[in-house]
Length: 218
Figure 1 (cartoon, one colour):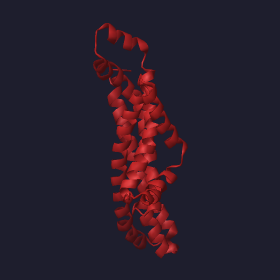
Figure 2 (cartoon, helix red, strand yellow):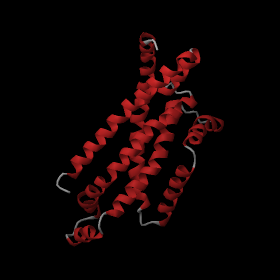
Figure 3 (cartoon, helix red, strand yellow):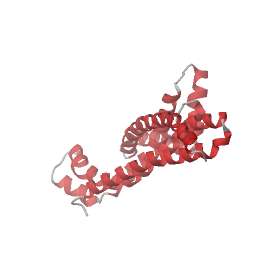
Figure 4 (cartoon, one colour):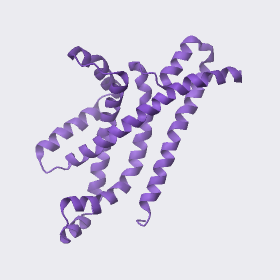
């Protein structure tokens, strides 16, 4: 293995890694927003709200992320709606992982002991005060481990975006391999290392948040 030739590959792959990080950051933002909005709606007192959100969650959890991306990028133009590769990818990733995240939010809120809710009602707190001061702080601690896993899964899921022509890390690696298949070992080796280097800080950051959120609670 020639080290200098391997080092020449890194700038091309780093360019793709920057796109991967950009898409990951935007998708995480969308996924978190969707997770909380859908999670709260799943607990709504109105049946029709729960029904609509339940349908969204089950459809996006029960269908392939790759097909969802293809539908947004290749099928929507037939209806006159054209999305850029990055926009189609961010929407697909955000809605897909938001569906999983909504179940995390819903289950964490339901896991807070009912006695906490009853005590806050006895203190004459409004519904917003109960959620902000009592329920959500406790539920957030329970959400963090699952959200950490979802973020890492989302990062890895961005590799599918290469199939809708987005020049992410996987796309750049496959492009290099097309021009020189003799360096397949080095190319995929570097891609493995780069994906790990992007995912591991997310894991560490979520563990740090878990420790911070648990102070005074355990």
